[in-house]
Length: 181
Image (tube, rainbow, N blue to C red; front, side, top):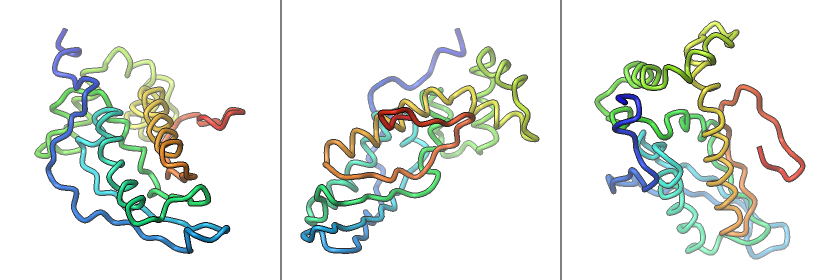
């Protein structure tokens, strides 16, 4: 019962605690046929990785800023930072995991204990020197993939651009015919 209580729901677990400066940089000319490249540098906190809605809600203003500047066309490529999806390993956990006062080690410990029956099989199937971290990513891989694909695929479709979405740590990544992970 304890492991299921206190988890974030489907609504954004998001507070408007400041976005910092919305940093977008465009290279090339969006009005020309060869298009342009936009580099996004989003400011993200632990809460932004709480669930799909929070992740999307935090990234969308960056896309809106680029749209307002006239940088988005069908030939635009939007590039997000490397490993931007890796912290989705913390998605859909107990609210305490996102407490800024909690250390990463304490947050991961809470995540392990509250998912013990999912964690143990992943741990025993791990071959890494850091079995605990590998097991966490193995255990959370389906959620990471679902959120990563939904958010970045949805943004690409909504804004009619190509997105290079950085990366997410996955145990056994693959690409299907339709381009999904």
